[in-house]
Amino acid sequence: MEHENGIWVMRGLPRNHPKRIRNYKQLVTADFRRRRNKKGETYGMAVSVLLPPETIWGYERVTSGYKETPAASWTAICGRVEDYFPKAEDDAIIKLIGKRP
View 1: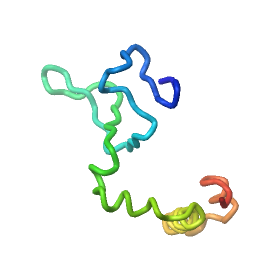
View 2 (view 1 turned 60 degrees about the vertical axis):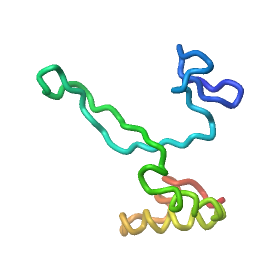
View 3 (view 1 turned 135 degrees about the horizontal axis):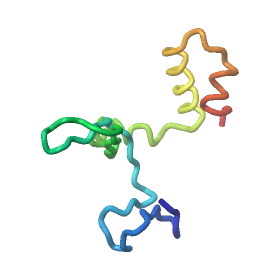
């Protein structure tokens, strides 16, 4: 993928192709699936399934975070990481998610 004029371009696709990703589109990994052959057996590496966050969590839940300030968002992320890793030091968490905005 390349960035051209504010648009992420998938190499080889024409400009008006529907699978081109615009810069305002957010995608998250929803699942990993393995390919299947004609017999239905899985093979190869798992492939990521990308979906817009609205399809996973709902439009209201996703857009409710838009009014949050960067500092409040950083604090919430930091607290979530501390919930999962209670023994982690503050320096390690800051190194992982970045310094306070």
